[in-house]
Amino acid sequence: MGTFLAMKFQYFFLAFALVACGPKAENTGISRAVELALSGRAAQPEQVDPETWLNGAEGVLMAIPTTGWGGLLKSIGQNGDRVTWAGMDERSVTTQSGIVVATRGMGFDLYAADVDGTVAALAGGPTEYQRRFELLEGDDDIARAELNCTFERVGVETVTLATGQYTAERFKEVCLNDLIGFENAYWVQEGGKMIQSQQWISPNLTHLTTQSY
Image 1 (cartoon, rainbow, N blue to C red):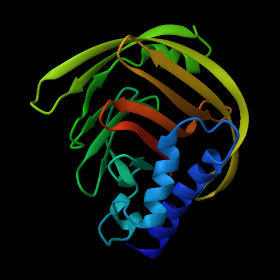
Image 2 (image 1 turned 135 degrees about the vertical axis):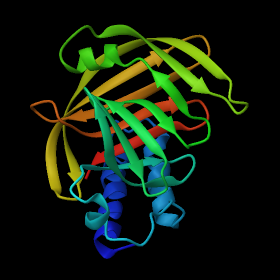
Image 3 (image 1 turned 180 degrees about the horizontal axis):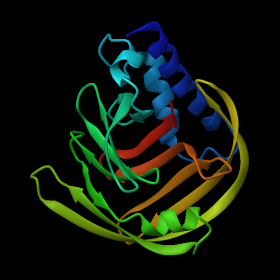
Image 4 (image 1 turned 90 degrees about the vertical axis):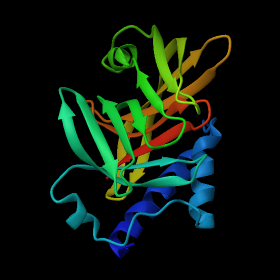
């Protein structure tokens, strides 16, 4: 791994460490990401200069703490407000306005997700809505789940990125049904740019964390 990328990746986990140490750190996924980084078990990209690999494309840092996977991904395609990000290992994540709608190559993937309610809530819309998920199971079957969600503003926080510290508003999303329950967190700057998030993607993988590069 190049020195610059190593510093970026270290900042990624340090930023989440600061969040995890705060009074409102309720999810262990972020703490797990920090533990993986400190133990050296987090997945690392190939030894290639990140700026050369990005070649002008937008980048984002992502990690799945439960598996130890993580690294720098770059934008490889866009369709409207949906962007597909791929890493050097060719695993990919698709987002819609920053919200994860699909993963590929992770094992128990998120096959598809309805995020319209979340996107609307982030824009000031209704704070109670339903979300639907299609989850890829081990035998390639697709399981479907529908959850009732609530969305609320937590407050303004300082987020540490590789490029410095930024002020962002933190939002909390809680989704439940009879079998599944999870909490997501989004850090959004004034103007609507999401600079950090913790998002549930499946029962096996649990949360995926993202941070602006």
